[in-house]
Image (cartoon, rainbow, N blue to C red; front, top):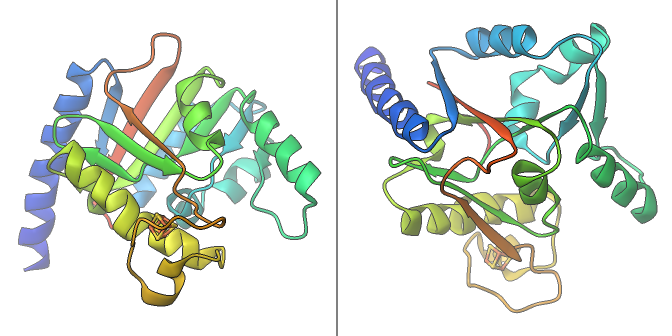
Length: 213
Ligand code: SF4
């Protein structure tokens, strides 16, 4: 059964790759995380700087350590004990890195890339900042429409992210998005990237796995 499931997911992901190419993105399909990681290690030159967006997917790849080991400069704000000032400084530096790695909250079958941020640094960096952006997503991020993508971003990704950061939001108690209006709300900026922004080289890498939120 697993084989059939994988086969079906591959067919869907390959169609999304074609849809993304029609939207002027670079796009590639990978069967496994290992193949994806090899591609990333080949595509990003040693010695360059890499900003990492707040992304569970990227952490699950286990690629950050490999880049560090071979001498890439990793800039990321997911570090314990940072002061608010240092955290902000690092987020800004991520936006000036040579490369930027992140995921997306959802990608539609037509090639729309959807995200919801609380601060907006990830969305900003994807659109304008680093010259080269890699967006990595598992099959679980694929949705039929923009409406479904926004729904997924809020009802799945944001609720889990709120839990991860112990946000003071109703969804952390109920596990459900109620489109809250509280000070701790983490859903503040929605972006739909419909075509590749003109001055950013965006490559979307789809992998036949379940990754991130
Ligand atoms: S309840 Fe608020 S913070 Fe939680 S997912 Fe919904 S809008 Fe976002």
